[in-house]
Image 1 (cartoon, rainbow, N blue to C red):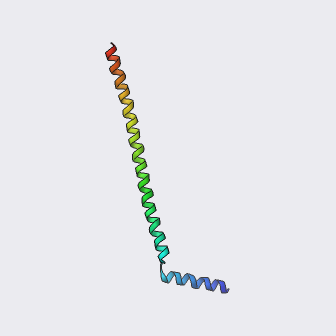
Image 2: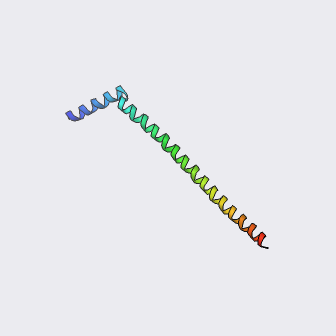
Image 3: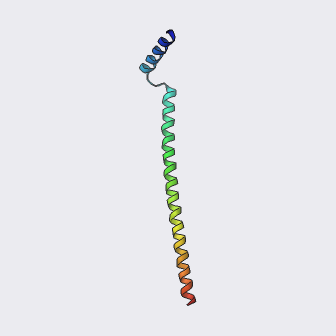
Length: 74
C-alpha cells in the first residue's frame, strides 16, 4: 500500500514538474535522428533512381552502337 502511494506521489510530481533536462535532450536527439534517417532514406531513393537511369542509358547506348556497327558493316 505504501509503495503504491509513493508511486502515485512520484507520478504526480513528474506530471507537475514537466520534462527533465535529460528527457528534453532525449527527445531532441530522437527528433534529429529521425530527420537524419529520413534524409538518408531520401538520398538512397535518389541514388537508386539515378543508377536505374544510368543502367537504362547504358543499354540504350549499347543498342545504338550495335545498330551503328550493323549499318557500317552493310
